[in-house]
Image (cartoon, rainbow over all chains, first blue to last red; front, top):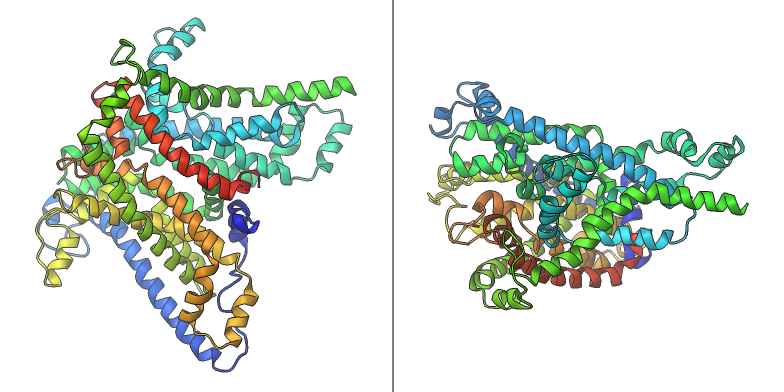
Length: 317
Length: 293
């Protein structure tokens, strides 16, 4: 790891592509084969058991989401006795999770988009353009990872109540409120993690390509747009996926800023539901499935990009 | 040439202007502003200057110390070793060269990625009085008829178990990276000496993972002392039942959003920040290279 000269970021990147390095490769030593086989058998058994254990809560929630309420209180059965989608229907319509899903998508979508734009543009500048104070500014960006949300709660809340509406009022947007969805989006327009990932990626792109663009007398923005951005696909994917996953799941800032029920996200809707109608299990499990499935799909399709998130978490510490 | 460099510099500033303004406004500035607010009796509106008054009140706040801090420390003391042990076990297991390795790694990692709200809801259901967990216990001959999250004595331990499970996947990936940094020839030497799997692990792998242990421990501690989601979801904003799941961050949230005591909540935030900053700084000093990788 880092202390051995291999920072977590690099280690995690290797993790994405490499096959196991250490462990028990075949050595051709007598007596080793049998021990290895037993080893492997134990490993398989443990893995299947643990994987099953990890999957049971999710499968059980899916099973319950297709039950009737009566079915959930009439003793144990692995599968629903009467399959029904009424849990989903109730969740979406009676308990407004249709609205909450849309709200989650709007918030996560807006924040993801702005992270992609701001982090790629800023990451390009930090990686390639020379300007005085660049390293200091970049350290400042990384330093923000050490500032916990709880310290920022009160100041940001008061800023969103008092200052920001006054400022945008001067710009002509009168009576704007930010103790709502606007605020949740505004305070997450870009993250240090996104900027860090983009910069690191741009640093790995060979300079020759930009030199060619320079010969064509292309400006910096054009170089960014036409040369760098098309090459940054994997980094953009990682930033987009990680930002979307984080904001889709997020609880803290929505819990602070969303007070109007019509703007609730799925996690806030679930928090509210757990407090109010706890034993309505089928719609609650349906809402949980709604919260999980988009992330599961993204994870299945783009698994390797999540490793970049671990690298970033290593930076975040 | 000189003007070209100037132009490059100006464009550079232009490209980072929005992110930098954003970080200054919403990250750097709030540090000072939080401290400023904490020196006032600030409720809905800014009240009189009280100096260290809020900090003195916090020092004598028994709910903060006997519930919020105590629960947070108990939670951290139990969840960190559990996360590390589970993470290491999973990492060692999926580091074997066997089939479906990628699948298993993904399966173990997924709970870390799913929404905490959804997982908490599922846990509430499974740990309900007539839930799956009690049903299984019943078949094993152990009769437990209470909801695990609703009882004062079992609520926090249940959250500890829940979070040890959900975050073990992340710890697994950190440990995997650490495991793969161990040179292969060390294992070859052990094999020549005829060391068995357990002995190899205990005598070689575990000690060589020391930097990994430290890194995972710090990450885990920083996460644990900031626990909010599960208490908020399961114990409600008050951290019930009877404060048994109240954490320091949830307490701060309540003082600010529930009681509109902004000055006091800001003081809580500053104290927590000072603590976390110290832990993070220790980590930075030891793992400082990570950020300029």
